[in-house]
Length: 182
Image (cartoon, rainbow, N blue to C red; front, side, top):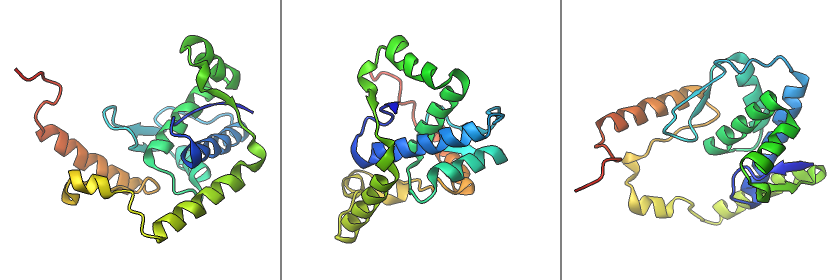
């Protein structure tokens, strides 16, 4: 199948996005009356905190993230692509990247026959790496104290809401980061 590079990160991360996209496309094909209106809410200034508000959206989320442990960023990216596909059609999605965005280099052929199995293998390899002591957050811990982190579970809408609330509180009291310093 022809697809778009969703994450730009390659490897298992991108394969996971593609599996989520494929699952979502199948779900939407089986549910052509899916109502996107007020299905999702998020912050325009924070990527990866997208909350499903409707029963339909929660069901779609359950289908696309099942057994994947995907990130909030993966979820939001895939939902955005699915929404575009639902509005403009699959070929319209491909054409948009090829012609309107002039990003034909992001289009590639995906062999979906082994995708589910490859993603399962990616997950096992990642878990083995973590079990061996790899700490993917080591660099982050050196820069930002953990008490400043906002932790959320993308599979738990209440956790997402609390995370967004904490983030808004931090943003409201933070100095304006867009002002040029003189």
